[in-house]
Amino acid sequence: MTMFTLKRALLTAARIKQCRFFSASQNNWNNRKGLVLGVYEKEGETDSFDLTTAARSLDDAVSGKLSELLKISGPALKKGKNRIFYGLHEDFPCVAVVGLGKNNAGVCGSENWDTGKENIRAALSAGCRLLQDLEVSHVEVEACGDAQAAAEGAVLGLFQYDLLKTKKKTKVTTQLHGSDDVAGWEKGILYGEGQNLARLLMEGPANLITPTAFADTIEEKLAPYSERVTVHKRYVQSWIVEQQMGAFLSVSKGSEEPPVFLELHYNGSPDKTQAPLLLVGKGITFDSGGISLKPPSGMDAMRADMGGAATVCAALVTAVALKLPINIIGLAPLCENMPSGKASKPGDVVTAKNGKTIQVDNTDAEGRLVLADALCYAHTFSPRAIVNAATLTGAMDVALGSAATGVFSNSDWLWERLHQASVVTGDRVWRMPLFQHYTRQVTDSQLADLNNVGSSRSGGACTAAAFLREFVTAPHWAHLDIAGVMGNKDEVPYLRKGMSGRPTRTLVEFAARLAQEA
Ligand code: BES
Ligand code: ZN
Ligand code: ZN
Image 1 (tube, rainbow, N blue to C red):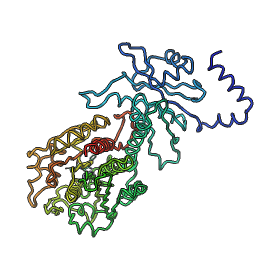
Image 2 (image 1 turned 120 degrees about the vertical axis):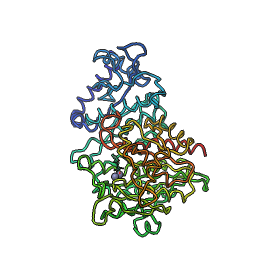
Image 3 (image 1 turned 90 degrees about the horizontal axis):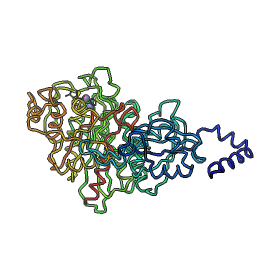
Image 4 (image 1 turned 90 degrees about the vertical axis):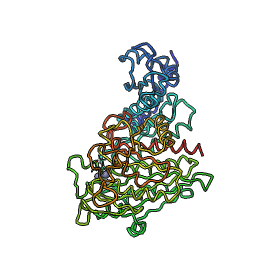
């Protein structure tokens, strides 16, 4: 009799003795524990596999039963494929085994990401979701050699926006299995939760996630860290007027919902005088297009037009939770873009904080207006660098789709750091041009210094970036157009369908790396 069969026999005896207890607990699916393990594809062999260290130790504990089952239950698990085994181990009634692809995949030069980390995220996300769908409420997850990527995969994979549904997904708690890299695991949990916070805000309907509700949510998230973070919620219209933010005001005035200018100060650096990193996010909680009304099809997605604000605020919350030794200021101009008797009309001229006049020929190009004022305000803090994120143009989606965030930057130094961070997170960025060619198209205005739309329809993401540049004097600025990565259908395998929260983890990783440079 093997150890395993002996244990099972003892367990059966115990079950008979405690019959009432066991029948109750067996029926209670929600108390079941699961385990997610990985397998690699064997180098050079098509139909064979290599177990990870954790999978091997479980295999040893069950006398080779795991590898035996893997062999007889179908073809060797390819990357992203999975299988579930029941009753394999007494501690884990359900074991999900997931394909990790090739071992030591590493950074791929052409893909611009770390394939090994991406494989781990995808595999563990799939394993956790499989167990969640089986209503397993506690899942142990193996690190697969990278506890941070494993935690990110688990946390991102399990997220589902079901707040407003009667029937909810099983709440799953996760735990690291068979590794002592607790620090890596906890870091991954915070990175994943950061992105999930952005997803929560982006997915939420616009009648619930108003500018005020958005600011309240972020304030609540930061409340436990009040000794290191200050939250200014500028509810009052008079503050915006006082600041001479005429462009922001012109967008907000079409709505009944009051605008909010959210300003977050995180003092994480031991050097109190360290110049801050400025993160600025477009916060249009609903973009109807205004008087230049959008067509109805797909307009609901414009509830996520505050994705820039959501990702930068979530990145700041995560930086605080990670206690990054850096000073960061987060700015989010929050308002709705609505048509009404008070709304801006095509041809109106408004004045931004820096005194530049803008002819608003298309009220649907509102993101650049709210950002223009926020960027001017960002300069008042003598920043080390300014990074803004915005779901700015449909043209960005046409250009790159959801493969990468488009980055327009006046600084090679800043671009390189954002790029390096994105290779690690797998939430990629791709550099886009800031040619004078595009600037000429937005400075061509009949009535004002600038026009809020380019004179040509071509290169829409580039003309929008050229417009923003007119409000930047800082030497290190980057504009991230995140319109293409706003939602996920099935392109990112470790995210369920819905608003993506991208590129929160890249912003966090960028800040973490910058903190090390101080
Ligand atoms: N919020 C939109 C851009 C957008 C489109 C984001 C699709 C995510 C998905 C933005 O305010 C907008 O409407 N831009 C216009 C600009 C145009 C009028 C110059 C666009 O892209 O069509
Ligand atoms: Zn718009
Ligand atoms: Zn918009």
